Length: 246
Image (cartoon, rainbow, N blue to C red; front, top):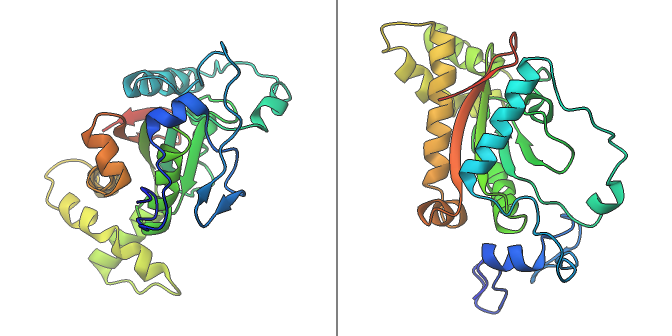
C-alpha cells in the first residue's frame, strides 16, 4: 500500500530513512499519480544532506540565526553561489508555518540561505488541510527534521478575531472562515489575568497550532511520536526582530 495516498494499488514505500540514503525530490513539479520522482542520489562518498541532523540541532541552528538577525550581524552571503546545486534538489532544515504578514520573512528572521527553510504562509499561521499537506511534503519527501509555527506581534488576523469575539464585527468575503480558526485562542486568552489580549491570543494561537500538528495523522503525528521530528512554536517581534519560543 502506498504510504502517501493510501491506495492499495500503489506500492510506493518512501521513508525518512530512505530519503536520507537516496536524496530528496527535486521539486513539486515532477509528481505523478503513483508517487514522485526523486532527485539523483548523492555520489558515493559524498557528505550527507545538510538536514540529516537531529531536530534539536535544527532548532539550535535557526535560533542562532535569529540571534544574529536581531543583533544586525547576519551572515554575509553570495546568493549566486550554489545555484546549480540547489537546482538538483532541496534539503531544508525546518518547515516553517508562518503568518502571511508582509513584515515577517522567516528566511531573514532566522538568517538562513535559500534552500534552508521550507516555508508555508497564511494569515494567522493556522493549520488547514492544504497547509498540512505542504508540511507533510516537506517532512516526508524533503526530510525536514523540524516544524516551527511562527506567530508575530501586531498580527492583524488575530486582532480581527478579537474584534469579532468582543465587538461582534462582521468581516467580508472568506475572512470569517479564517477567523473562525483563531477565535478559540482569543476566548482562552480572554481568561488570562495579565498581559495584553492581542499578545496573549497570539501566543495561545501558536500553542494551539503546535498541538494540532502534533496530533495530525498520518504523517506528522507518526514522525513526531517516533521522535523523528520535533515541533516548536515561536512569536516574532516585529520591532526587535527577536523570536521567542513559546
